Amino acid sequence: MSAGKKTKPKKSAARQRAAPGVLTDALAEAAWSEADVALAQALADFDEAETAQKKGARQDALERLGQALSRAARKRGLSRVGGLDERVAFDADVHDLNATVAKTPKSVRIQARGVARGGEVLIKPRVAPLEKKKRS
Amino acid sequence: MSDWTLCIDFGTAFSKAAVAPSGAWSRFDPANVRPLMLSAEGPNTFLLDSAVFVDEDRVLFGRGALSEAEAQAENKRAALRSFKTLLSVSDLDRALNTNAPTTIDPHRVFQLRDLIVLYLAYLLASIDRAIAADPTLAQGGVFARRYAAPAWRAGDSAGMHEVIVRLFGEAEAFRTIIGKRILSPDGLSLRTISDALPKAMDQAESLEMGLIYEATAAAAYTSVGLDGAGSHMIVVDMGAGTTDIAALARLGPRTIELPEARVTLKQAGDFIDRVIANRVLDMAKWAKREQDRAELWSVLMHQMADIKEAIMADGRTTLRNQGRSITLTFKDIEKDGDFRDFQKGLREAYDHALAIVRDDARARGSSEVQAIAVGGGAATPFIQDLIRRKMEATRPRVVPRPATPDWAHAREFRGNLAPVFPQLAISIGGALAPDSMLAARTSRPANDRSGTPAGRD
Image 1 (tube, rainbow over the protein chains, first blue to last red):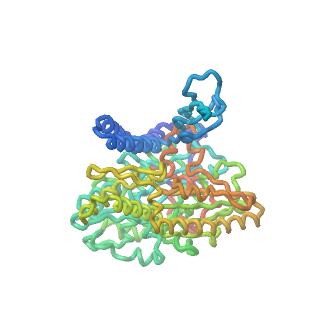
Image 2 (tube, rainbow over the protein chains, first blue to last red):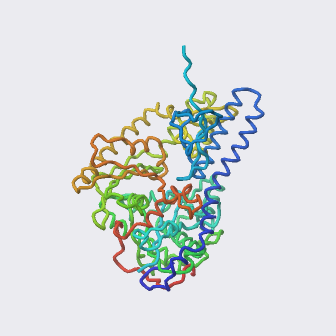
Image 3 (tube, rainbow over the protein chains, first blue to last red):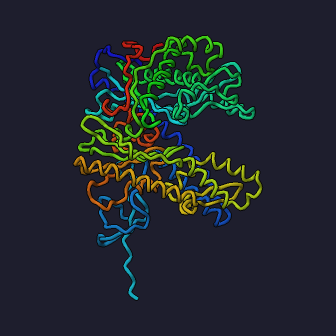
């Protein structure tokens, strides 16, 4: 590291931007290192959920499984899109309709939240048409 | 003219550094931001453990220091950590001239100043190694250096800055004498240090460095590249030890802090950890005996980062201890009286600072104030709620900014910068900020190493 006024031969902008691979690989490893632990935890919790003899134990294991997956996702910069059970206007570009329907619904309910990284949506929210209220 | 700007961030637990091209502020390209890979070991190479351990016949640094401290913990031995806390004390000179306690230095030969200089030498050497390992930076160039700091000892930042750059100067002189040996995993022998350190102290000159406040660095990474980003900003920084609120105003090319808006609360991440642990202890009815409670406390503290993150992000967490499960929700935390007091105090402090920055913005004809949360607690829901609250008066409006700026998701990073951005944010912001945002600069020229090729001792 040098400091001071003496200048070095200038590099072109293209050269200065060269070789991003080493940096992005190291950034990826840094982010993955913590996500790996959470994923390992999720795998163990999944086994526990599958082999649990009692309903309560299975519920606990599933809760921890979800928690570990959420943690892994956060460590990788993933975020959820929408809210569970949220009622929204249907938009085919934004939602993944999880039902066979004769007519495109106007309003839908979010069954499963979508997943995004930054501005990029990796999985659209899965939605189902709102059930019509039964007449009493 | 420098080609690059380097900013060092002393974290309480880790040190970080990042480099950006000089002039990045006006010609911003995310692809040119270079966080430095300071650590040779561990999966996260961007974090350098802030630790020094004085062993029987040698001094260890970084990860090696922590490992040895852990191995010798039963002998009441400890590594020196939290330099940041030490450097923030009101009488810095006196603190630096204090002998290190025997848990840290059983030989009683080092003052705290010596150990900090040794660590800074290790940090500077790690920076050079990182620059040499970066294909872009290794091509050479002149680096302007800065360090980021909280607004320590308000009103006397210049005095503090002189002391810090002197410490860096001594560290640089020591590193020049020792060379790359300081990066050895085996550390340095006490004999080597006792030979070289006095010489380094004699030869040292203050290093040419700038000081940037952490809040200003946050303002820089938040508003870089944004057109019309606004002239005023309020920053809520919840770290481990304190929660700081600061207000900044950009006046032409200069950025100033509005000192009357600054508030520091003693409660922050560590306080929340204790609240969570105490709530769990209350709920763990099976942990009656003192020994069981102490064991549970230790387990909780070990896993606290994950526990806290889950509660804050998902609103709940399920833990297991001795085959039993405990589910803790954010509402359980809010039942704690101390926590409620903290939330109230935080709201009042924020409102106080916001009123000042909005008044200033209004007086200068500015139409908006940006609000940003930084630090480990940036994503905490009540902090996010605070900065996203709707205001009664519409002007100037408050615009909340994301803790991780959109540019950190740039395609060039392939999705890999954003997840680690919060840890590196201050060093990156400090490297991006223009000179006009600096709180202090060294007036005296440093020992000029112009033209020294990067990474060669």
